[in-house]
Image (tube, rainbow, N blue to C red; front, side, top):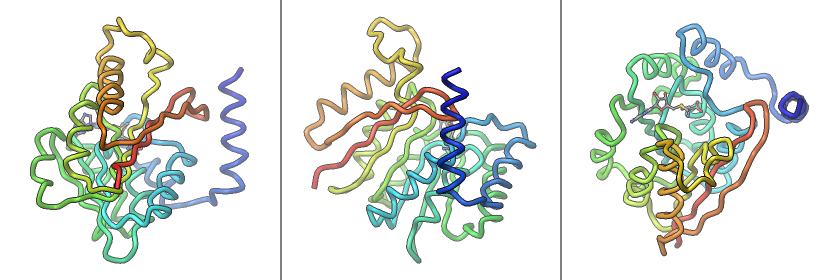
Length: 220
Ligand code: SAM
C-alpha cells in the first residue's frame, strides 16, 4: 500500500540521517507505557523543527501541545546556551510524562511545561515573550485563536509552524461540520488576510500517513 511505502521511505532516510537516539526513544516508550496516544511528530518532522530553530537562530520557543515532550526535546536541543522553551499542555498526565522525559534529556532547566488549557495559560506569557519560534500542535478547533496569540507573542521575524492542517484532505470542504476542519479553514483565512504574515502550507506523507503543516513568517 502507499502508506507502507511512505513508512519504508521515512525509515530509509531516518536510518541514514537521524542516528539512534536513546533519549528520544525512551521518551516515546515512556509515553506509550503511560497510555499517551502516539500522536507525536515523526523523527523526520522533529528534526525539521530542530533544523528550523537552528537555521533561524531561535533563542526563545513557544510550543502549544506538549504531549510527552517528544517535539519539545527536538526543539529544545536546538537552543543556544541560555535559550528557553515554554510548552503548554492541558492534560496533567501528559505534562507529568513530559517532565520525566525532559529531565532524562537533561533539559529541565531549558524546558518550562505549563499545565492548563492553552487559552487560559497564554495570557500570562505576554511578559515572557516575544518568542522567536512558535510551534502550534494542540486542539485544532482553537487554531484561529492560537494564530492571534502567536502574533501577539511574536516579534517581526518570528517563525510560526502549525501542524496537521490537511485533515486527511477534508480541509477543502467548505461545508464541513468537523470542528477541526472548520478551525483549520478559519485559521487559514485569517492567516491569508493578515498583512503582517507571509505563509505557505505543505502537504506531507510518511510513517504517520498523509498530513501537512503551515509555515508563516511575521514580516520584519
Ligand atoms: N507536539 C507533540 C509532539 O509532537 O510530541 C504532540 C502534541 S499532541 C498532537 C496534542 C497535545 O495537545 C495533546 O497532548 C493534548 O492533550 C494537548 N491539548 C489539547 N487541547 C489543548 C488545549 N486546549 N490546551 C493545551 N493543550 C491541549
